[in-house]
Length: 404
Image (tube, rainbow, N blue to C red; front, side):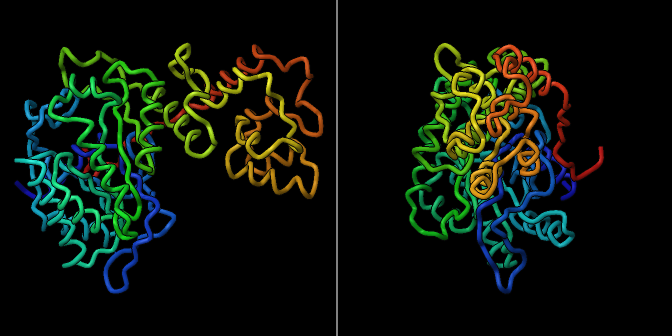
């Protein structure tokens, strides 16, 4: 098979893996090719709009596992291909020299055994680093079930490692991916977390959960994420809306992927990591799923309306973070600027506050943006829902290497 055909097959097969964040590494090279900046490398787009500039390929789409939801499962009758380590190096360097990419995301189906697959990944990345002196960003997929000695070798070659949890519960895995187990994945996460060398996986680790293939609630999904962040210090949990690529009686029948639900989970994940929210603040047994009509922070604010409106010139920094439409950067700007002068609605807009959302929950110098009589749940929710519906989100497809 020609190299170009292999590339077409294995790049297309890799598009369903969302866990390829590329920030946080400080790897430098003096005499080699490529470099990694703290700001990360993000220029192209994944299928859900995430910005990346990594060559994203599989080593092979052959697999000994038969996960019901996976395009590359062994029972599917699809074209199979496998790269040699030299081919991956050649393609990566050619794309880098043409300025198409700044790094590599390398995953693989499991061929022969987890150890055999990990050895292929290690051989490939060792060639890139040692023979071709490639110092650019590399994110690799750790293979669950592989030996710790191989995990140790791979971790010193790459910037980031990820081990996909795949589904939110062990029950879901047993149903749809009986060859996999959560324990094998968390064992990898624990090993990465407890390695104390600064050169070992310097950009940290991430994981991915498929959303909508099984019946877990948003509460169960977010509790799983909260536990993973707490126990294994993950940089990111990625949420991938289930895409029906296979037919199976155990899989749900969906007309389209639950992209809006995926979006709400990402918004909630952001609140956990940067806004001091806990899962119990956002969801509970009575409300186990996010409101599709408004974002999680706005939904929380509507359910806690008695805590609003907050006076923008007096409330604490933590209170500023709770206000819909105010992000971490704008909260810091507000907190610093109000020491010098009293802020108005016009000042907030200049600072980057999303005023069309924030205005319902704040006062400036004691003044509400409209009549105080309009500060009520029905009025605010109606306008927030309208505001959500007005801008149409454009879903970018992952950039293809070849025109169809």
